[in-house]
Image (cartoon, rainbow, N blue to C red):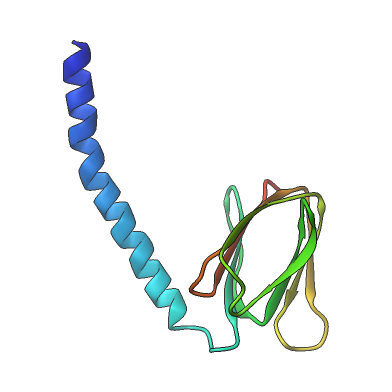
Length: 119
């Protein structure tokens, strides 16, 4: 009985993985087409949905090792966030501020930044 369950899981897992990978690749390509050479695409997400999904010039996050800024051509990185303020600079007037209770920041090499926070 155990062998049958394992086979079924492996057989189902492969097609789902391909669909997810294809969907993520398509979303990344669509996002890349919507922001300029000196901008990054920010996705600030909560558990129930996306709070901000827009192009911006710079994002400053409260990393566990200290506050740091992310902009175009920043190296890929994964960072745990401590409670603090996320600043989103759109290149206009004052940056937008979001108070976060922690979370994670993912910086991708293609200019996409994902910040995932619990609340």
